[in-house]
Length: 195
Image (cartoon, rainbow, N blue to C red; front, top):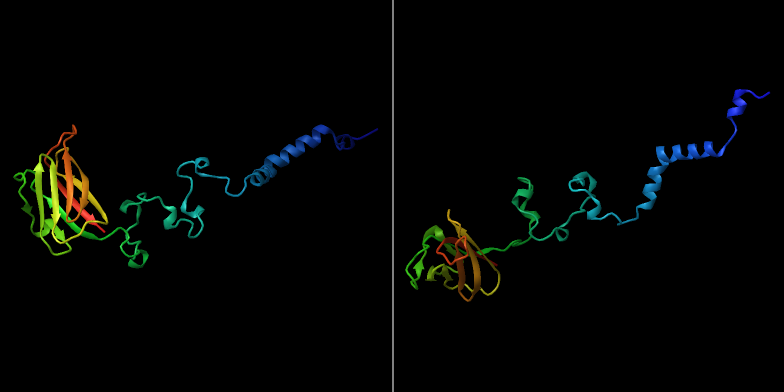
């Protein structure tokens, strides 16, 4: 006659299968999942937004060439985290000239010289704004060559105007401003030439 201990020690297909399932569930599943993830197979679409933290990144994993142009601004940089040594020479360009056009409706075709802190011209020459039609302006920086670099213009004031750079070159920058409906409109604006 067999005892109960002898009866329970017999291997069956069910015993082996349940034991194997338990081993996989407890520890083997992670090993199998790990073995199926190949190098560089996890990409951005596979990662839920906000799940990668600083501690998950290797040292120097994020460098300048890996950051999309325009993706960072001052809100992304912690106060006192940058030193002069961290910046390359002229990383975003140097302002060679800027103007605040504080005369939105100056007489047509009459150059309005700007003085004091409302303008800067690195050549030392005069700076003026001429309105040639409704919402059309030419900003002139005497002695400054504007054939390279970039120009930024921003409408100024509480109205819904928008301004854009049309062209630049020689000593001048051409600006057009529009109201909220897209019609030409006189506007205050700032313009900067960076090189």
